[in-house]
Length: 109
Image (tube, rainbow, N blue to C red):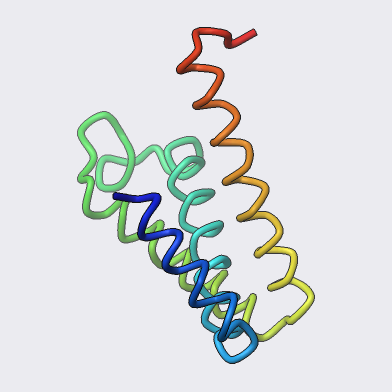
């Protein structure tokens, strides 16, 4: 189901790509900001409220969403940074695809 959704989104971007450039820049910036904040916030904020062993998941997700929103706005305002974020998203998708394919085949070395 995910492949079909991504294929439809790919076709939409193929035919209306430049009109949706700002949307794509924001979404890629948001995705990178959210993922980086979600991965590294437990290492930075070891408090009871956010990311400790008894932390609330909603606060962790909210903090990551704020960081993603800030990076999304930043990628809109700084065009070159936004293009970098789009490239980073594509690289992340490529890496995950290769990793999952190797994991599926049982060859992680």
